[in-house]
Image (tube, rainbow, N blue to C red; front, side, top):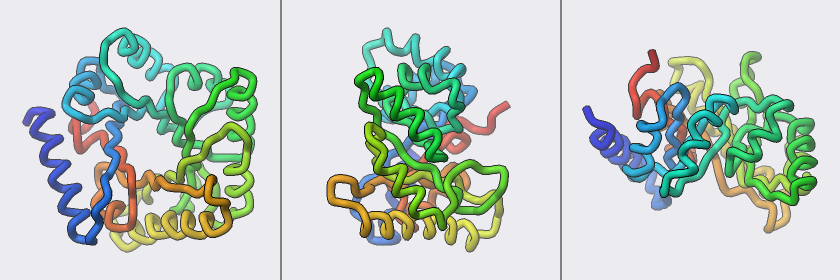
Amino acid sequence: MSLFDQIKIINEKIQTSLDSCNRKDLITLVAATKKQNINLIESCIRHGITHIGENRVQEAENKLVPLKHKNIGFTKRMIGHLQSNKINKALTLFNTIDSIDSISLGKKIALKTEKNNQNIETLIEINTSGEENKFGFKLEDDQSILECIEIKNLNVRGLMTVGPNTKDIKKTQNAFKSLRKTKENLNRQLPANKRLAELSMGMSGDYDIAIKEGSTMIRLGTALFGKRE
């Protein structure tokens, strides 16, 4: 099946999920292009997927820098864990960092953006499953999350999570519902100009559940490109 056909099928599934919960808004589809080549990324963009997500700074540099020289517009998103020693490079490569998982990382990014007179959009990562191998703020750390949102120059647009590693649909639903409720709770405490709009949740195996629980942004790799070798 061609990439065009696969994108069409995914868009139809997204619309079905939206219709099933009477949602009229749009979903941002992020192509998770880890281990995919430049030609495939360019094909995604030309077929209408204009948000490209990369997990690793070094790999992203090898692909995103050459794409800068092509006459195509797209949003470059850092969706993986960002190491402190990669911040400078990440700020030159990406339009948005979707994985701020600690106050420490948030402050370091803000320090660099202030020094460079730069403004970058960000998402805060929340560990909604409680799994020890996942990054992110704990759900109960409201005050720490609020403190991170208030950091100057971060321009936090919303929250992000990775669903639990389980086939239990109820656990997945609860994780995504928890992120939505966290956003709602935070917004009740934030001034209008700081309120969060985005919920980046849902990947290839669970994006239907995520949309039904309020996701505004899904990150798809396998669903678009097939299993990585």
